[in-house]
Length: 376
Image (cartoon, rainbow, N blue to C red):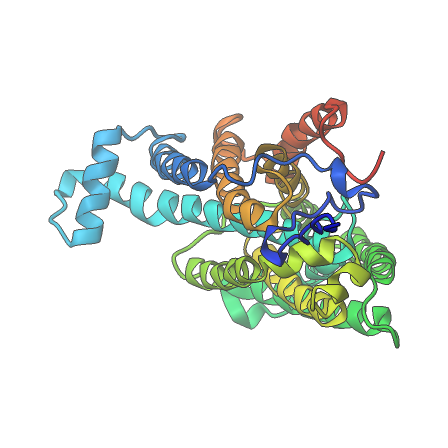
């Protein structure tokens, strides 16, 4: 009598992970694997391009779309600018376009690092700032604003000090969280949280003893995030780091799928969880440090975009990492537009508006029966 055929084991590339921290692999909500995510990616790319044009056109001074396109074409092709158009050209090219492009870079980077952070610590509440990097950057920025440290760097002093503070925080968290078993998720979360409290306390002391009230206000404003300091000089570095980080994560998507299932499952699939977690830690810290240095700590984007993306395309990191950066970049364009036009001439901190958007979205996700954050 012939024996029944054995069920074939799933191929590595077809494995779809559960949500970060989920106890039931079957609980993750994902779309059929055969459905391509390419149409969504193309639609988001077109939407992002249109949002860039809108972000450049709208503001305290309205610039017609036809003028925006004409001036941008002249800037990129070296065309002639009429003397009467010089004021608008300065607004479009020197002020708004680098700011809008930086919004795309920061939103995309925070969204991608949010995905990596949740896979790194296997926690649905993880975001790019869970490792204490932003708190360390805040110490450096606050020291410049309140005490004049690194004044020799001029207008780049805050960014340089914030990046150095982020590097210091990264080194401290790594050394404190390291153990004979490597970087375990629980030790990373606990160490990053503890160090974040410590660095926040240092920043608070610096603000408390600030000689001028305006310095304290500036430090507080920076801590909630702003793109007001965007320039063509700061944009290329941030864009290059984010591009490299997202490229690495996309290339590691299958390993991220395995890591999300647990260290034992990852080992059976040929993935060294300890090495993978170390690489993710370095990449996440580097990208976060650079972004915080140019924009301050913009909260909720790195926490919510991964969850919103999974709700749309499932938990497969190949899909999530293709969609999340575009969603995050497009979102931050409009958030920044609201921040600089809602109460002119004042500018609202980005973190206030991202929280106003993120909290209701978080509650909506919690009420969805088909979506699992981190277990039942």
